[in-house]
Length: 353
Image 1: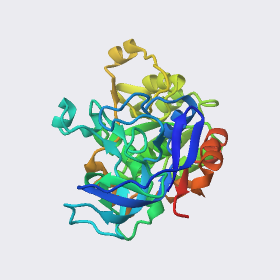
Image 2: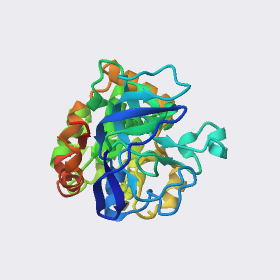
Image 3: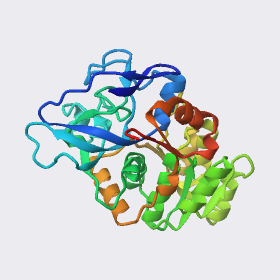
């Protein structure tokens, strides 16, 4: 079968590999649509980082690995012991890989597993292939009123949903979102679905600023032209925002986030940083501000996002800016998101197209 494989920095290849074999407790899929994620781009430009170069403690795999962790698919075959899925079912994949035995997993925090990873990053196949085998626990049925292409957006939306959910957000809070990329825009949509009354977005790219407005931002600022801290205070009775969600992961943005957040406010980091950052701890101390991290999602987040999509509370169709084929992943996918990112949000690969 055909699969897109990561070998190293700026080295991904469309190859013929063996079709994976089905085992007990697993489901064989035909991936339908796969999103190209920012973490995929980081691996391509700077990797390997998340992708293992020594055997991963759970999968035992190293590069090359098949890419693709944001995807929907069609069930082809089910393994022994599975009676709640059948061939033809439409599904989305929660790509979390966890050991179930570490302290975090024993507390139910599988997204914080000490050996965590993801399908399409640390092994066990990936969505950018003609066939894929995953454990039943990774699959969620997709309601008939949600197209498969939208199913591929469940994963990035779940990242944002989880971040908002574990934050101290309340509907009457003023919120600053740093970055108008896929995760930042998913945060905007999540906040809108949760009735946020004041959403401020900081973004440079003109088209992404328009996307932010379309998805529900009340104010869109440009950090190259606006004083983000001053404007946030001006828009929030001189106080600053209650919560900042950092989906950008750049030092200048973090500096602005700490200052733009009011006393006893919270800065929530979602971004995966390419290198260590610095923070003005004294500003946190004297303002009794909190800084917290958030990572991926839980099964409950997936259920809630799917329900919100089915009920029309989330309408992310506009995030899809291009659909490409498996043999176009590098040129029309990765390179487009690197060199023309201001005109793209989410590029989907139509695997069976």
